[in-house]
Amino acid sequence: MSTATDADHLSDLRRQVREVVAAAGIAPRTDSWMRGFDASFTERVAERGWIGMSWPAEYGGGGRSNLERMVVTEELLRAGAPVTAHWTADRQIGPAILRVGSDELKAEFLPGIRRGEIVVGLGMSETEAGSDLAAVRTRAVPDGDGWRVTGAKVWTTSAHHATHIYVLARTSDEDARHEGLTEFLVDSDAPGIEIRPILDMVGEHHFNEVVFADVPVPAGRALGTVGQGWKQVTEQLAFERGGAERYLSTYPLLAAMVRSAARVRDRAVTERVGSLAAQLVGLRQLSVQVATALDAGEVPGRLASALKLRGTTFEKEVVETARYVLDVCGADAEASRLLVDGLAAVPGASIRGGASEVMRTVIGRSEVC
Image (cartoon, rainbow, N blue to C red; front, side, top):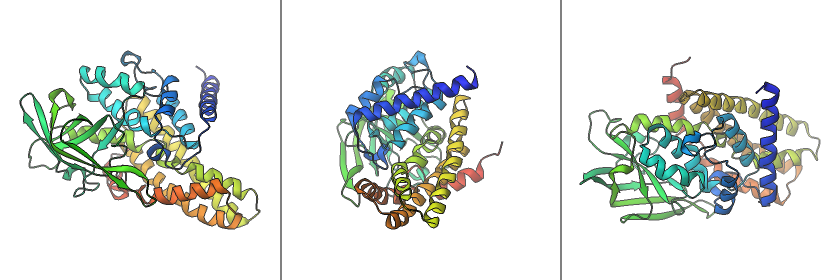
């Protein structure tokens, strides 16, 4: 396709997503990819082929580009659509299965993810480990032809809705702390799993602590190579950190702020909103670079970490600026609600998916092409 045709195609795709969102009649939310669980909306997205859309057709995927996927995710996040039910499985677990999963795992999981039927909770963080994944204490020990998992994970989004929990566990003791880790996909209803709710500061429940007490896991549920979990998870995190959700989580609040600013002529307001708009242009260009790298078969760890680092800082700036702008220009009911949403969400933005200090380390250790 020519460049003009590509642009026309992407514009048409944006229009389609906006029509689906408008027809759903949803109320926008900030942080909708974590706080907006709606299985019926996910079903609509799946029916349009917008889950697994960049996966190879041979595995039931849409065979489309990551740039096309970026357009869809941008529009869903821009609208504050309730996409939590499929977000992690589509963004992260499906691509990980495609990269390192067995044929059996691909056959078992990918079709269900595409249909929006599989909900995955990420069992990475632990109370003692924080953002240091190499310090995880959850263990998996051999048990016949399978494994037994014991330990606890924390801040597991949507675990109370999940059909499966992704678990990073230690399967052997090595001198090097990054060795001996393995990834697993565990049924949420397996015996020995306890899911404990964690409420945020406004009383909402999307986080959980998940306790594993000698949980049986079939051998075929190990993802990739046993003991190579660290290498695999660092590649997987490029998918988690490099998406539009790292700078568009607060976009509905930004849009509400712009509407308020348009009603009042104030130079300080204009300058602050203009600064945010300029940053957004740069972040979006970085997101395009990540999508382009993925289409080229690369694992853009450095780019993704840079986007995550700067994007989450931007999201906090949106909330802080909104406090000023909405005070000066006035806020309608929707803007006030979105501000409350943002105030509840952004304190964790620079921690989830890897703390900012970790992102700086990743960037500093990466080779510059």
